[in-house]
Length: 82
Image 1 (cartoon, rainbow, N blue to C red):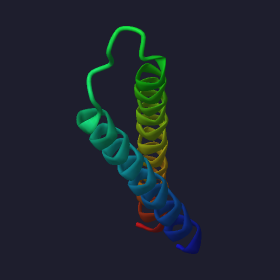
Image 2: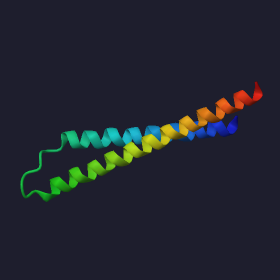
Image 3: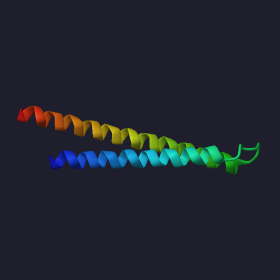
Image 4: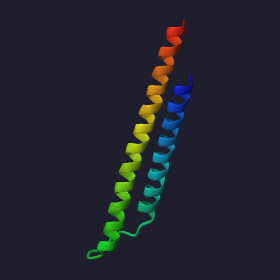
């Protein structure tokens, strides 16, 4: 059971971290001023936030897969015991 709890905890932590990254990046993008032609700094900032958004998405997906794996392991353990 301890293995499953560790996997669940790690998955939940990864999912929550990814969710926070997505929320922060989305908030930064939403509050950014529209880039003006020739303002490469604003374009660079939005590009960085879009990258952070994608990293957060991948972190959340990885966490969800870990939680799914823990659920499958737990199901297998229960089936084995029954």
